[in-house]
Amino acid sequence: MADLKALFAKAKGDQLARLPEDIRRRVKVAPNGCWIWQGKKAGSGQAMLYVGENKSVIAYRRVFLLLNGHLPAILRHTCDDKACVNPGHLMAGTIRDNNADASRRGLVKRKLTDREVREIMHLIDRGDRMVDIAPHYGVTPELVGQIKSRKRYAWMPWSPKKP
Ligand SMILES: [Zn+2]
Image (tube, rainbow, N blue to C red; front, side):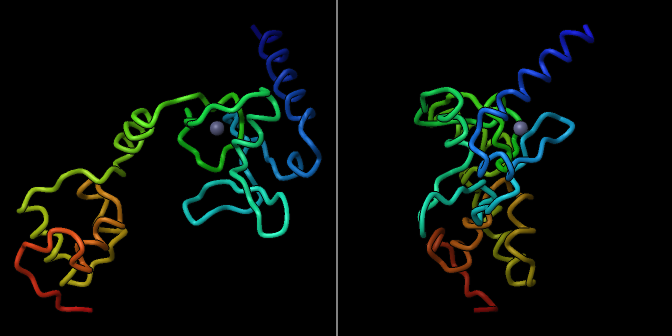
């Protein structure tokens, strides 16, 4: 078993060695096997790689392409870490899978009940932050923001106390 483990570790090491230096030096291998991106990250936490002036690509997609020679339209993280660029932690998926992943992480814009919307409005009035409110209702902070700015659920009577 130990031998297999060592072999596996070596194979993974070799994969890393196959990457160009500018990518390799931005990767830090975590104990759980994640290749944590040390380079730039997008606001969403996505690992980004600059490939020219003002031009960047999603780092894990670039790594996957370099090591596998092909690139699925959608890649899912099996480790739930958007900063991980280990191609072994990525698998091809569909938009539906992606939505399911988001839902599992409680990030989907699910439909709220009128009562929940009223509660959210109350919390906003109370001064709670969108990022704190959102997880309680399994929605994105963006959706809470849209409620606040009256872009969504505008038909529900409410005048926000704070602009
Ligand atoms: Zn990972």
